[in-house]
Image (cartoon, rainbow, N blue to C red):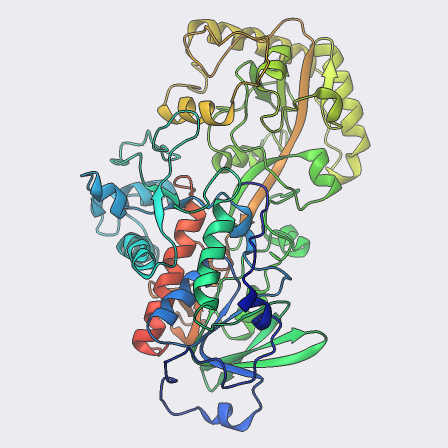
Length: 589
């Protein structure tokens, strides 16, 4: 994820986005409306706008569906509740994970379907995974969703390239000039561990890729007279019998009805900023990188339409700096790949609990480990501990500050005992919002012992507890997320394992309090392999589609590689747009 960047909107869009077009003026230039009989409900009520396809949201999922439908001859309206388009996609780095993508094939690399599905199934459903099963041990429905992702991801990328809507290039890691390794590059099922991650060929950088991806698609749509209606909050779908034929939205205090002759596609994001839903369904989430509009609107809308809910407790996770998230849960950055080499993460007992260099989604789940004897979550809050070397060498790599005086959330102690006292003071200030979380009485003694053992591992180059630095992922992402500060006085790491360096003893030591957070949630209504939303009986609701973080994620909890979120959103948006044009949104197709 990266800092938000809002693209410049073309002048044409300025005339369209405020909802000023009359019904019937939304058909693409040179294209006639798709002819089929209007449902009785559509004939009997007033419509403020109408088009063949209505896409709700303006990130990768909704834009992908909109571009795909429009390219097949449909008139399309994009409806967004926020004042600016792009959604959380626009805040991201824009990296897009696509299996068997055309750039892999250009390099002569075949990402075999059977092998790729084994990797996806192994990672997404480790309890169920059975390699000799026809569905790899997964329920048929779950297997078909993963299969649809593989079958359509590359086709989506090629389609958008051919249209000129957005072009991709291989994502290479800054500083190391390598194709990015997947987040489980070491699994034996992963036969193509590099090169599945793509990024927009235009405007991609560490801070602008997502904005470029969204704005290119939006520009493609507006150049074809497809309006984007901003500040329109969709409140329900309109049905005729069992079929969805439109939506209702609120705009400037007024009710707006928008007819969808072929179908409605929701790509509205998760519920990361709906605290009621967070408390109901998530183990814990103190903050989120998602845009503030991610409030789970599609969940009650879909429920009212008769949709079956899938898993609701899943999410794309990251650790966050506790005190920053307590100030504002809509955070700018998560603690993604933790920087530093003379750095460890410990729990309330002062003990390490995992590989500090593992990817953010999987590392965050360590916060939810339950101790059945003590009846507690010992890792609920965690403590990133580092020394003056990492502060100097890697200052400016979030969350380590370039200047420690500028960070209100940095905790400093002379030694383990003093650091424990300072951390206890901070925790006491926030006890009412953390369930009274405190350090164990032996935290300082255990921390000193933990540092001593880690220092031995660093000198030997091997971490027998958690294999830190053993796999390519650790070493490559270390290089990317731990760039050396210009002007540092620290030497290059001379240890045999570049991810580990002994901490100075006894200190001084520095710390941040880490808490569980989210990029966004990814739970909601169930869809099928055509991206159709399913009803309580498991049958498609005609005319209703979903993609992205607003639906039950096809990859479940697995963040398979950089861009795993956008890759799924883009692909299932493409599937939705293509299917509703082929089948007219019919239930049986």
